[in-house]
Length: 467
Image 1 (tube, helix red, strand yellow):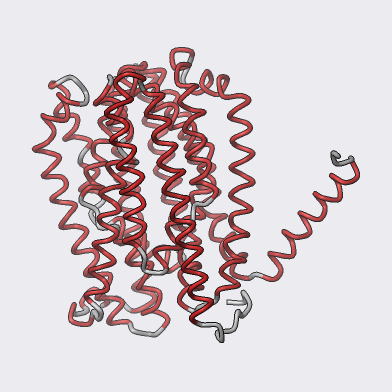
Image 2: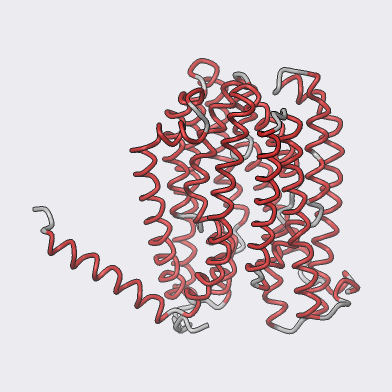
């Protein structure tokens, strides 16, 4: 039997009462939403401006050049990720503990080492891009004359020499308000430059310049916030700390290598979708696929701040062996992410064609099918956005890497057999399947690790979420 009107009203009433109760009994959850509110407000602004700038770029460039735009920008990002050691995750994992224990010398040494490693590999990444640009222009863009544009946009790598380390510090110190301001500034500047390019009938070069300027702002802003925050927390001489103060080198190396391997596989199987489409097909198909991915990402964007703000909290629960509060915390954040993702998915399924028309124009309507297919994978990953963070908190970065390698390997092999014959819709199905398999495996592993913790430490009080 269906619910009556009164039953539905009572259900909604109980739901909102539960939400209010959650907030009252959970200071940590309130803190998450306070920090998240800064990033959420920034992301709403970014989403609006991003839609405007992407829409104007698509209208200005057309399908083929819009595809080229995605190929050039994704090439730089992909190569940057190839050399990345995900220093932000290492900082979040270890810096908070040293700060809480007043181990300021160790904290300074950790940040210093992470920044040195990250900047060294960023320089290597740019050198690699420089020498690989002729091949990229011929193989992906199908136009050797575009080689200088690959190098030009590759400057974003040098502008992000310390970004991951700095943003990890920002997360640990809770300087989300400042980061939200930086995000908003770069969005406004990029949008203004895109509008200028649109009004003046600029070409691909002007659009790339706009995105480059925005990335430079986004890369340098967190560095200032991190330095300022560390100066206030542990003193302005933190960067002089000797690297000899770093304990457990083997553990740090294991975590860093695991994260780097994950970043490499992630780059190949997830962050290079447009590059695979352009490799197997053409920049035109890449243009359709770019629109399909962009619309999904914009609709699911409000959940992204939760990834950044909840990881330190998950890590704290695991460190303190607070298993029941951890389960509660995960259920609650999943409720919020699932509610938003479900609403966005329904809206996109019902009004997707009109969204494409408003976003990019009739020329891009073939992106509709790929957009709906990708929604399956993005929706699941968005709902359980914490799946990898939970494993990292247990120090299980290797397992996260293996799941990504397994699911990604199936995806890549399938692409060689299916995409040349069935086009970008096949790539969309493979990409969605990658999310389904990897997220499901990570969730099962995370559940097992929590159970093991409960068995190993049954005497540890569950505590309350008063921290």
